[in-house]
Amino acid sequence: MTRDDILSLVLGERSGYVRGKGYRKKPPKKSQIQQADIEASVSSAIESMRQEMQADMDQKLQEEQEQMTADLKRNMEEDMQKKMEEEREHMKGEVDKMFQEQMAAIMTRMQHVLSLAPEQFFSFHCLFFSP
Image (cartoon, rainbow, N blue to C red; front, side):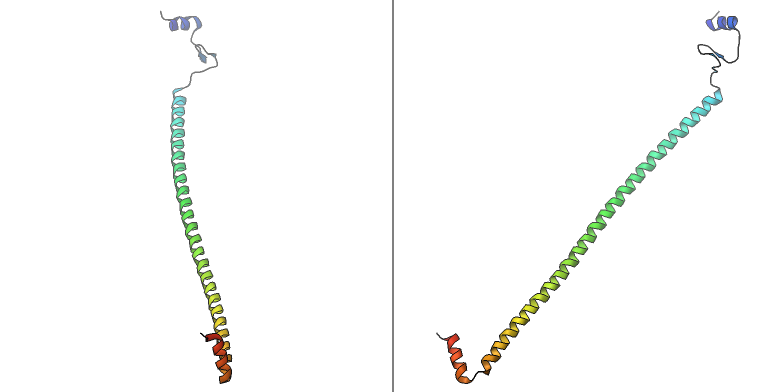
């Protein structure tokens, strides 16, 4: 006779009794075990999908950050080029203005010299061009 047979003979068959656990501790039913296995499988599948989705989201975020960085860099370069061109045009205008003013001053002096009488012109010429 086995130990389980002796226990059954002495204690009898009782529903709700689990050996080593006592009364009211029922062993899990087969359907409960299957349900737990299904829940574990579903939970595992959900976690796997969540990890895949997280990896995809991280990759997309990285790509968007790289695109935004490239766009920002390009926009900054375009703005810098535009500002440099504007400054170049402004400086060109200033140089042209200074050149015009100097040429006007030279023309005024030349007109003054040409308006002098010939003898005054000769003395003026000797002052500046004598050897």
